[in-house]
Length: 331
Image (cartoon, rainbow, N blue to C red; front, side):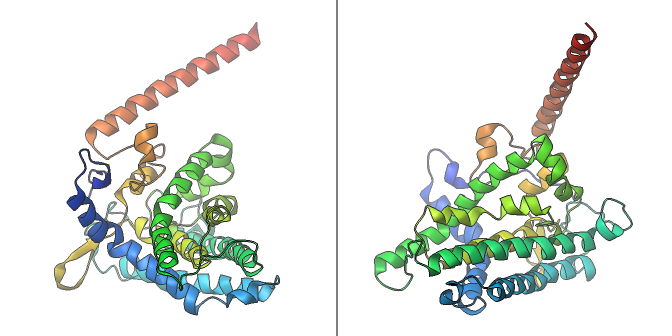
């Protein structure tokens, strides 16, 4: 199937439509994926992370435990989604953006296998970098070098923690757009981001299959809590979200079949267009910075024509510069 057109959330409609906004927040923003990441992040903090006081002195074992927790979460959630869609092929190519399956035997991928390549970079690099960031931030909290906002306490602190939990998603969206545009500069793209873009036909493990340098940028979002007072749980939530949420968005399927023939939202059309066309859709639709900075591609025929024309003009301009440089060298 093709990729349908992307539309902005009703948050940006003018004049405002409060009921449409509330419906979108309940049925699209929180259900089902963001709601799941909040639950998984809370569970990871409460039951799968060493107590905060264990991070008070640097300890390799604490970092290793956080790393192993990350690996287990990815194997269960990302691996489970991959198994359901690509090993069991439970819905065939129904609702799949690209009818091709993942690559086997192609030289650019480690082991000449796209899935094994993606799994390697996800588990060996992404999980490790995330563990280092999380452990470092928790060390700061454990040593009272960062203010801790309690979740339990007054109604005000609980409301603040809940509001910051929801605010994490647009804050990460802004961070993602900024570091993604940076990674598309020629040198950083060649050094690092090109590894991720080997995945034109994407699958769940493609989500955080990145060069370690890109992981250092992509997973740095929790550093925002150096400036924003928060509960340390939000560091764990942010990093589990960054590790796990790209799996459905890169799944390659627009909808997932569930019981009774019903479907739920699956992949991210907006980001899938980025993998297809490369020089557009660097951020997300939640905070439409692409709309504001002229890199928005909604999948329509008009957008394709506009991007083709822009590329043609850019190629002509670059060719003119190369001719001018050659002439200058010859004189």
